[in-house]
Amino acid sequence: MLCAAVAAVLTGARSLIAISEWITDASQHVLGILGFAADPLTGLRPVPHAATVRRLLQRVDGDALDAAISAYLRARTPPPAEPEAEKTPVRRVIAVDGKVVRGSRTATAAAIQLLAAMDHHGVVLAQRQVASKSNEIPSFTPLLDGLGLENTVVTADALHTQHDHGAYLTSRGAHYVAVVKKNHPGLYAQVRKLPWRDIPLGHRTRDHAHHRDEIRRLKVAAFSHLEYPGARQAIQVVRWRRDLSTGKLTIERVNLITSLSVFDATCTELATWIRGHWGIEVRHEALRFRTGVRDPRRPVVAAAG
Image (cartoon, rainbow, N blue to C red; front, side, top):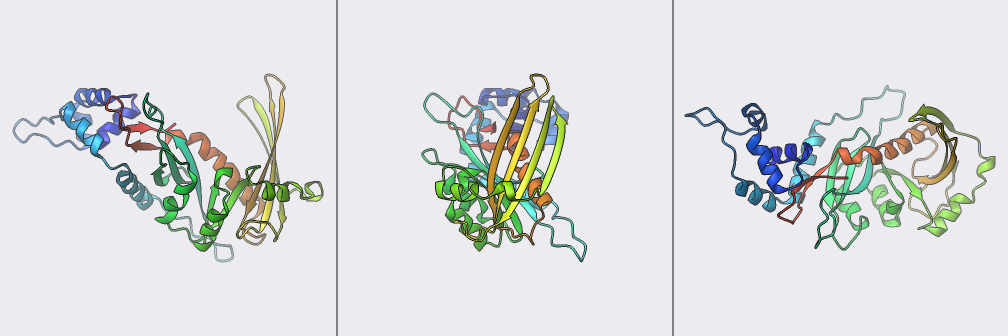
């Protein structure tokens, strides 16, 4: 029934009634694929009553379901390819990103917010629901507690550039690439005021897609006095985007820090991981599902958006 509920939401169901109707209308072939047992006398696969579907979905423990699905996905995700003997070990890169569950906001309840850890291939490794009167920050450590972080690189947005998060990751043997913004004024000033004009270019890419030209330039500066646990380098990424239909040019500068030293990662790797995290944020909504919507008129398995 859980698989059927997810399939119903994927096809557009937005309420418990719609989920039940989808299951009722499903063909015998589809019911067989979903795991419904056949009646030994008639050979037909009976479907559950709408009340049964509602009771099941209202009682499912969302955190337990997340843990089970994440463990299944981790077991099916191959480890990074073994490197050649003369090269450094291949690192798994994990993006931490939060999203609001589409369709979960009601007249009496705020929208459900989720925090997920995904590898840069898009596989959800862990997921947690954020407390309704809190934010993503307290969920960061519990989210990653069940994952093996040795020799991994964790990427996250500026909200998770917290001293406690940096100390936690380094204590687990992980590295980080973290965005620095004005919510940390001291650290932001340290990174922004580096003599970036005098620092040589480390990596450059140019792409032409979606009716625009885009150039990305990355510079890296080794800096052992950054006010953040384990920080070894500061990074600046500058993106030029020109809309080919309007001719409009936008320039964006992004400052980051990392615990990786100049011997641990190349500029190309850093650029790939940073761009990979931005790509995860774009396609995140298509890759996550969650139980726990309390309103009986709405689905308890909803696509995150």
